[in-house]
Length: 105
Image 1 (cartoon, rainbow, N blue to C red):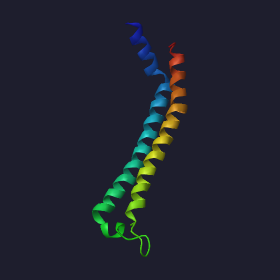
Image 2 (image 1 turned 90 degrees about the horizontal axis):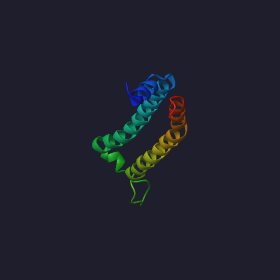
Image 3 (image 1 turned 180 degrees about the vertical axis):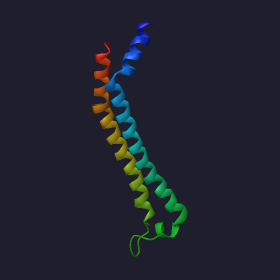
Image 4 (image 1 turned 120 degrees about the vertical axis):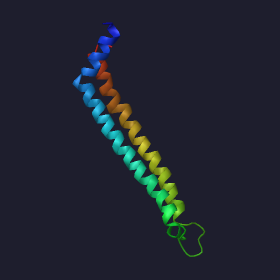
């Protein structure tokens, strides 16, 4: 067996690596689910409740409820992406570095 294959097997069988993968996958699923709920919730409102989204924010105002909600979806996307990247760059990268260190890389 080659050194590359040995290193790969050593990393794959490391409990810290398996824990990292499980934690990262779980976190990714939660973040993706939240994003899907917000995005598709907004799209479903557009599809099935246009009248409510078209409601003006106040008397004599041009802006409807849908505009700030759409901006909210965009801001939510930016915020949730920032949260994920920050955690990936700190916690997940640190754990991956530890696994690689243990594997002698």
